[in-house]
Image 1 (cartoon, rainbow, N blue to C red):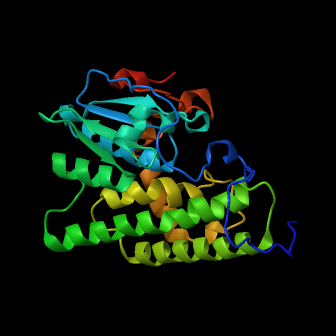
Image 2: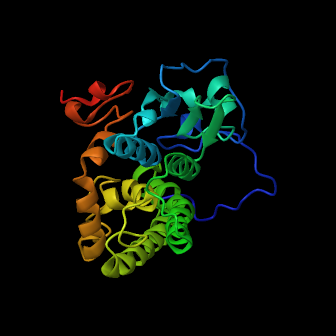
Length: 281
C-alpha cells in the first residue's frame, strides 16, 4: 500500500516516472520527441493506429463500409507502436497534436484533411459516405447523444478503472472502488437503454454502437482488463445480448484484427493495406 500520510506538494514537479505499464511514455508536455515522416500508402484514406478499443472503432466502421460496397473506403492501416513512442514522432504529431491513436488523413480532397479523436473520425466517415448515421433530425441526434456519451464516459473506464485495476504498479483500494462504482453505473446506463432498444440509437446499427462496443461490449465479454467476473458482467443481460450480436458481424471480426499485435496469430493483422491482408491465416 502507498503511504497514507502522503501530502501533495504545493507545486507538483515531474521528478520521476510514476510507475506502471505506461510510465515510460507518460510525460507532462506535448509535442514531438523525434523526427519521422509517416508512411503513405496507395489508398486515399490513411489510418495510423493500434488495435486498442479506440482504434477498433475506426477499423470496424471502415470494414462495415467496405462490406456495403463503398470501394472508396479502402484504406491503409499503419501500425503505431505506442509503447515505443511512435505517437510522438513529428509526422504523427502533425496529424494529431494530442499524440493519441487513431489518426486519419483523407487524401481524396485537393487539400488533404486530417482527422483526429476517434469520435471525430467516426462522424467524419459516416458523413462522408452517408452511412451509419441517420439523416432525420431525431435519429441523428440520438446517435450523436450516445457517441458523445462514449467519448465522455470511456476515460473513466480506461484511464480510471482500467488503469488502477490492471496497470497501476500497486493495487489501491480507494481508486479501484471509485472507478469500479462508476464503471458499473455506466454499464447500468447501457443495460437500461438496451432493454428497450435493439441498438443504442434505436432500431438501426450506427456509429454509436461502433464507438461503444470496443469498450463496454468487450468488457462484458471478458476481453478487456479480464474484469468481467470482477464487475459481475453477467448481470448486464441486455448489454451482453447486444455485445454478442455485434461481435458476430463479419466486418467487426475483421476490424478488430487490424493493427492488432497480440493474442492468437489468427486474430492479428499488424498492418492492413488490402482486403486480402485479412484473409484467414
